[in-house]
Length: 243
Ligand SMILES: Cc1cc2nc3c(=O)[nH]c(=O)nc-3n(C[C@H](O)[C@H](O)[C@H](O)COP(=O)(O)O)c2cc1C
Image 1 (cartoon, protein in one colour):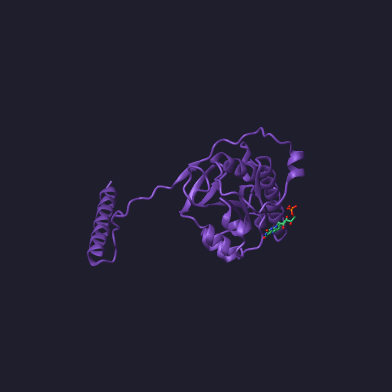
Image 2 (spheres, protein in one colour):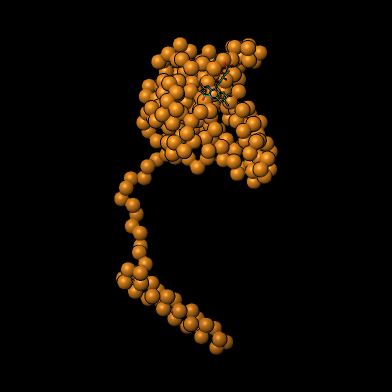
């Protein structure tokens, strides 16, 4: 019976000692209590994309036949619907139960990401900036505002079509998502996957009557630092209305 009061006494005593130590430490500056930040909390800017259409006006055979690398574009903007359709064709979720996408992926490891560089006035109703495509919500997340077409073109050895396109899709890869499963062989799987995605972009763009070109010549580090991403850039696809 006597053991309980003595236990309580030691619990209370140690709590008092701990509390007193914390108060002393705070007063001496050993522990700093962070005040809530004065800076306003910046909300993540998310742009929902229109639902993709599953009925086009061109057969897949005709799109394959008509596909060409197009490097000259009129200055006209694209619509958000067109951009969303191309992004969906590239990486959209087509089997939500398993998260499977429009392009195949080794072991469904999905190492690819897509960034979108929108030129000033490039997309109707969308501010210029660098965006990241989220396939799960079929939306764009603003990474940084502003027109970076000049910087992106410079990183791509000053290829004019990168500078002049109303929008550029940048395909990047986090290799370890695939190499952690397949080892070194996963590296080739990632590049194969980029090819599948690239062809989807070409064919969808063709069926919409738009033009694109696969650009593989660029300085990786410049593109990477422009996007501020951890992944490695693989491809740039400028997209515009055919001149
Ligand atoms: C891996 C790869 C990299 C490429 N890089 C560039 C590039 O940096 N700049 C460019 O203008 N075209 C590039 N192209 C496009 C090719 O020049 C084009 O596909 C080729 O001339 C055949 O023309 P077509 O696509 O109209 O059939 C690339 C294509 C591939 C597959």
